[in-house]
Image 1 (tube, rainbow, N blue to C red):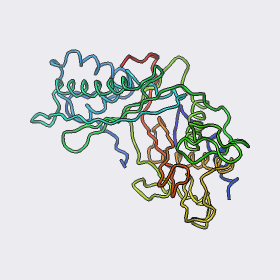
Image 2 (spheres, one colour):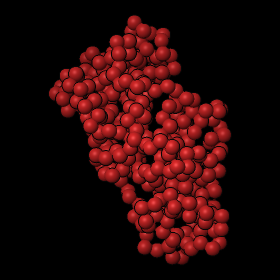
Image 3 (cartoon, one colour):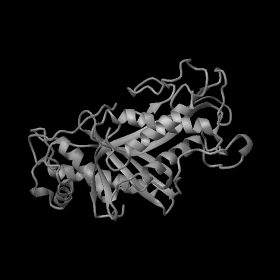
Image 4 (cartoon, rainbow, N blue to C red):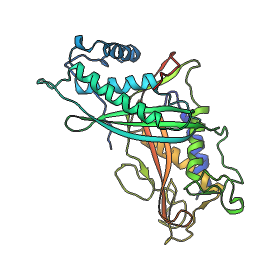
Length: 348
């Protein structure tokens, strides 16, 4: 398990073991370099040079040789992240996710003429700029872009924007007043009902994970981290089997569906014993450790990749304040990361 600059794994293990002891695909698709065309990422010893070469060639596409689909995917994704993203800027409150598609044409040899590459790049960049402009706040930035080749002649671009700065915790144990509703931004519950409106258990868990990542980041001062070859595992959702190959069932709970510790992520159904949706501090700490356990398990499927994005979200059936069923889900992204002294992102 390798997270070279985001996480100290020994610290994670100590947190997980402590918390758990207190309680009772997109499949990986490395993009191999093609044997034909102009290979931008054929020598990854210096990916920044590869990216700058690609961006420079966009200014003079007529004189550039055709490239493979894999080269196009890697180059456009890396170029957009290099210019606009800052995924280590973790102190945000809101997330905006979007997805767009772009078609392209291959030549008779199955390669992409560079004028076509330029066209696809501009389409995706313009879509990103439009989405950025629609976020009505001055505090906003791009977290990451993930570009995938679908079947045929179509690319999909998934993007995440952050907005509204938020302070992150620097200690990672939920305290005696941390009674939180399961989701829907209902705030705290029990004796503390009415406090913390606009947040919920899922939000708090996400803040703790991002806070831990920030405190334990090894990003060198005066640099920015650039994600390339971004990989997206299927989300892990408590109470649901598939499409993720990772099962979030708590291995230490021997009786299924008997309490809030059945899963490493929060899940409840009102036909079960002891069903509730107000989590106490012990349950919050358990789910925090459970999320890190799942991140660790997931990262073993992505050897030598680094964690670049995490999010805990919630789904429910029924009313907000009295759901019939609810589940927390864990979304992660992994990738190759390098550092640049170019710390300023370009304007979208």
